[in-house]
Length: 257
Length: 257
Image (cartoon, rainbow over all chains, first blue to last red; front, side, top):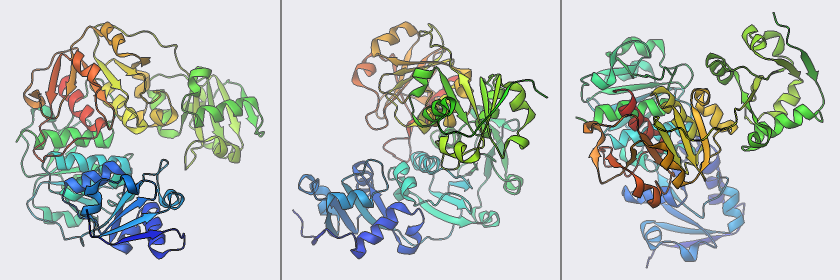
C-alpha cells in the first residue's frame, strides 16, 4: 500500500509531538517552523484534492487501521500517536483522528496585475477563512494581508479555508504603501456612497479591499481606492458581516466576467 | 438622568447572577427563561438602534460611572455587578463591561407569503449570525430554522447577528413538512445543476434554503425545492462557506428587486 516510513509515538516529550502541539495551538507558530498543521478529515481531503503533498500524515492509534489509503500514500512520512496524546495536541473541542503536516512555501512578494483580495486588519479567523474560500471560488489569485490581519496560516483560518490556502498566493505583513505594486484598480465598499454593485460595470483584474470587522477600511487605504461601491440594502441594515460582503463583491466581479 | 431602580450585586450566589450566568454560557437557557443576554457595547448599541428596550441593563462596577446615558435611560432596571463577578458571568474571552437582558417574544408560527430564509441544520453560530444579518439587510422578513440548526438566540449567534435578531421573525424547531405553510417558491443552491444565479430571474417573495455545513440541504428538502440555482465558480472551488453562499443569494434576490 505504501512505503513511507511509519513511526509510533507514545511520549508527550517527543520533539515532534512538541512541535505539533505548538503548530496546533499557537496561531503564528508556522512562521517559525515553516510548516502548518491541517487537522481533520474534511481539511485533509480538501488539501489532497488541491494536490498538496503532506510531509507527515499523523493518525491516532485507534483511527490508523481505518485510515483511507490515499492519506498514507500521499505522505512522505507516517506517524501514529496514542489517542490521548493526539487529543492533547489538538486545538479542537472534538479532536479529529487525523492530520497533515504541510510545508508552507516561503512567501513571494506581491504579484502585479492579478486579481487580488486585500485584507485590511480583518481579525476573525472564521471570516478570513471564508474570504479565502470565496476568493478562490471566484477566480482571484492572490490575497494581500496588511499588518494587523489574522495570521493567514493559523489553524483556525486553515480550517475555515477548507483548502483554499493551497489555491492562492498569500502574502502577509504588508503596509498600505506596499499595495502600489498591485497595479490594478482598488475597490472598496461604502455604506452610503458609490455605484450600486448590482448595476456597476466592474474592472477585471481588480483588488477588493476588505476592512476590520469594527472599524472598516482605514482612511489611508480608502484614499487610495480607485472606486467606491455600494451594496444595496433594502432592509436598512447598518452593516454586513465582512465575509458576507466579500462573498457578494467577489462573486459580482469574478463569476460574471 | 434616569429613574430606573439600581441594584448593586457582589454575591456569586445572587439569584439574578445565577440566571445571568446560565444565559451567557448555556446556548439554550433562553428557552427556559424567555429572555436573552446581549453582551458588549457593539451588540447593546445595535439593539438600541433597533428599538429594543432592555428589561435590565447590567454594568461592571468600574464601567458604571462611564456608561452611556442612553443605556441607563433605555432600561427598566439597572444592575451594577462587581468586576470579577461580571467576568465570571461572561461567556467571552475578553468580558465586556456591559450587557442587556432582553425579553424574547414568544415565537409565532410561520407566516405565509413573506420572504424567508430556511436554515436546514446550519450548525455554526457565526454562520447563523452572519446569515441573519444578510437576511435583514436584503429585506427578508423571517427565518425558519429546522430541527438540528444552532439555537437562534444563543449568545454566540446573538453576537454574530449584531442586532439582526430584532428585525426578523424567528421560528425554530421546525420539521420539513412545516415549510408548506410558507407558500412561496423554495430555492436551493446546487453545485452542478440549475440556472446560474447571476443570469436568473428570481421570484419575490421567495424562501432560500441553506443547508448543513458538511452535508448541505437534506434530500427530503431538496425534493420540495421549486428551483435549483447555481453559483458560478470560475475558480473551481468545491464549495463556499454557507454564510458566504447565503450572502450572495440573498443579495441577488433582495437587493435587485
